[in-house]
Image: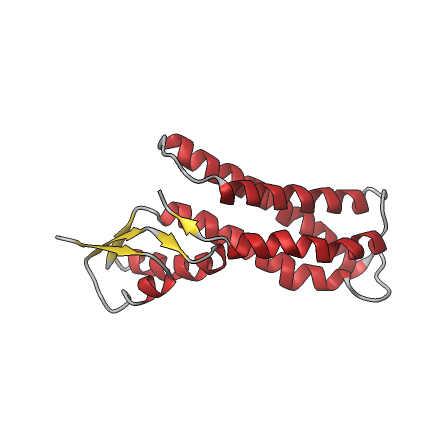
Length: 178
């Protein structure tokens, strides 16, 4: 079977491929990490249906995992900490444990991104990996300090706004595939 080679520079290019088949998709870039999850879902489905091939699907899956974890932290976990009378019990404790889990997941994803490029000996702009690692370290450090009793929830509440900056920056970072 012959495949037509198509270059995609953003998520709209990928969406435009849905009705086509027998494509080799060369994923060049995405407008941001934020759209990686949706783009991965779409391309993954097309690959599963054997209507296309994409060599960057593995890296895209890692970036989709990053986007998913960040969305969970930002939309599901942070709001739980901002409750007026938040104490380290019930839903807040659960959110804190989930925050630590997300931080660890981000650290593993950063390492997997690094390994992906070391395996192929490819040069890659390491900005995204460094941002993922930095956010993961920050989230884990803050969760550990509260869980270990070194700081109270009020201390965490004061830092949520500061943490949103790096998270939003990472989500908005453009992706350039090797």
